[in-house]
Length: 617
Image (cartoon, rainbow, N blue to C red; front, side, top):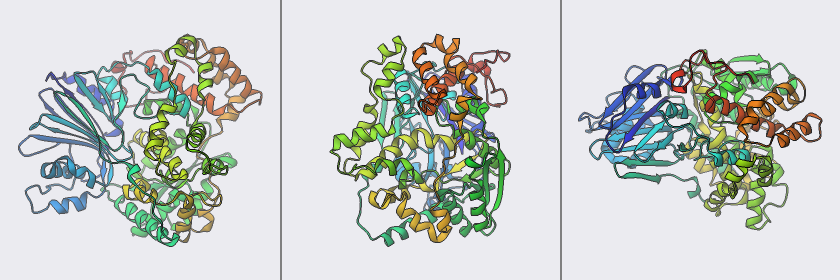
């Protein structure tokens, strides 16, 4: 696990050393163990390393014997042992046990075609001086981030946006991204909240040379086709695939463990881990003092079942003082406050381990959310195609198109005339048109919700404390299997994760397999009405926010009043608007309140003095 960064200058202009130092410094938390750089004429690739595999021999970049090829990686290649074995005895045999060296040797042997053989979570850069080209490659579903900025002459890349800003990339708000954020509660890739900064899309690679950029999609989940099999066959295939995905993710040269909430996803992962390990699994959970939000008893039940070494901590559910810190690490606004307890459990685990396995992805693959049950309780299968698309888009929507027009200030309303978030979902519906309706819904959430929000959460909150999160459900074999399973076996007779729960019940027990899903979140909506009412007013109605003129103050005040007096639950809308303002203060105003403990924070790169005033909420 690492952070990568660098640039490719088409005019062969070499960047100043302080620029690269600033880019690397902003990624310190992703890789506090080591720093490596490779520079050529007008090109540099760098790496901040969190040492997980081959601690002693895994320094990056890896460079070919002739000095022609250099590689840096963020992530892990879980099948690197098997790939290295295939190379042994030949001219490209590996000399270390590092998975990054495997990337170098495979590229030397096969060119870029090797990427389809990788099983892992990764974003890596390969510079090949022989053809004077830089390749940027991202994993299939976007577990590992990679951002780019191209000014037409120089292409910058980095694992986090703040590293690009440290290189001098302009910090301007992308208003269209804001429009889509208000639709989805996160900025849907490939846009970011910064004008001119984009995600490299999951399952894509870029080839950058002196003449331009080629963008290639090398994997698509939409290539899967539903198959007809007996339930018993699907259950065997599910269990075998999950078991091997977990086995591969236990490869580590440093201590590891797992997040354990007691939900079906994390419990299934821990159950599989316990079958592969001779010693107890290290498991970590946080609970809340407020019993109605506390699922830690379920985690304890699962820990007893598998004899784990369980570490749990009760915390105050009011952790909104962490909100600016979470947004800082995410680089973008997120209206999802479950980022905050995820940060807390990451802190807890990072005291003892460097790696955790998580259950992320299970809900999106196998219809685990209650929203699927509610939506498909209507006759969604019988809707005409256009009606279904419109209805499911609405199911994803926080603010509708007309609501946004009313919400905007005068200038923003004019600037966004004609912009419509249906343009985000329409091409995805086209890609999955061959699927049944349930799998179409899941496909959209895999491409949007998972990539735009739910994978950001474990990566950024884990990396904030230098903790690597591994996701067995997002093994590409599990993703491909899931989209060969008919949607009617994922959501059946009102049961979410039907075939999945049936498959894992013998392992984890009926109680844990079928217990009601509980969201990992905190009750901010209640607090907005009482103890945090002043915070809401200050953030959303204060002079600084009004001066920004993004939103009509009277409309926002009306929403607050509706919520406060119980006329309408506006929790999600208020969270989203607060997240936008906190983000703007951090990244547009360079306000660093509450961030002084961040080791990588570079005040000079932010353009503020170290004694800059810290703004209040």
